[in-house]
Image 1: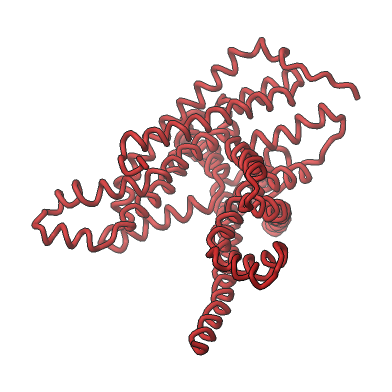
Image 2: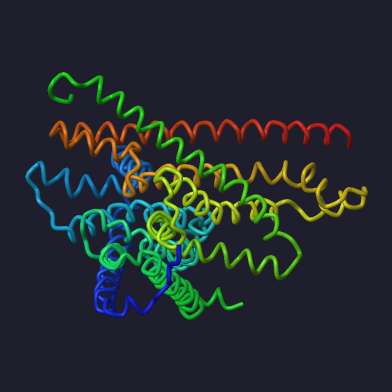
Length: 222
Length: 229
């Protein structure tokens, strides 16, 4: 078989790829912002003094961490539609990503809070700091340093995970790649190109996150 | 559950789907573990170019969505080579390569967590690289690798659902088929969720047991050491 690899055959589709990238970017950014924010009350519930609040949060986290993201997306898109709540592809995709990511971010935050030795709290109390001041000046600055690298991995995980929204027909980069592949039958070139795009994006995020750490958190300046 | 008295038939289909899910997860984990152990040892070695090459491999794979890999192997490669790859084979191979990248890092971390005095003592006793690895380092590193390894296995089980997209009738695809045929909805999703929960719980329990078991031998060794001193 003499197959001629030809990347220029994809040039008419640059516009579509750009559209797909924009959708992937929009979904990823919204998911990062929403899940990082929602996980704040989430982690408060996860370590709450009331047993049933803790229990419900744990059930949510355990369920999400044990069900494939794909199944979650199918439930939100097909399952809810059959029950009368019709979400658009974008809504279902975003909801799936946020529900999934929030569970992981809650556990990251919890690791940050619990990673601080109890002596810190006790010392703050002994110095006469109130709960708010302790939180603001003692707990938070240390917790941020603990969770920062894990949050970077989570951002990467969100970008990679957003490729799954194509199963609910949301035209992200992966969905576009699939369509272009079947239009041109140049599956090989298409997926190589898209793989490289993801690779560059993810490496850029990793690099930027590390830079951000150096700028915002002086402890990383070694 | 399931209209038309077809319950048992569908349950059997779900069970077959479950077996496919297990086949993909276990098959790819086996490939990933073999490749991961070799690359992980290379990554923990003192050869700079080898470490660099393996790092590029690991970083590249971890920066690309599994779905893109799956499409590249299942749709892309046959176009170029002219040889079609069956969906199940494509899923196992692709996921195996994917897992190998994560496995490499787990193995590297495990090996590097063993104190360097163990290497020095072993080499001083005249054991070569291979024997030191086999008899001294790996048995200790293995214990450290089990918790992240179990996490990887569970992630791998969840990822095997992607094989449904290229047409493997594993657990998720079977559930979708049944859902369409029976017009039932949440009962199928509940059963599907239950299926994944069961497999993942089994993996998690087994790994905890294995870890305890390996730790028991560790405790025993510490006891012997204490008695000797």
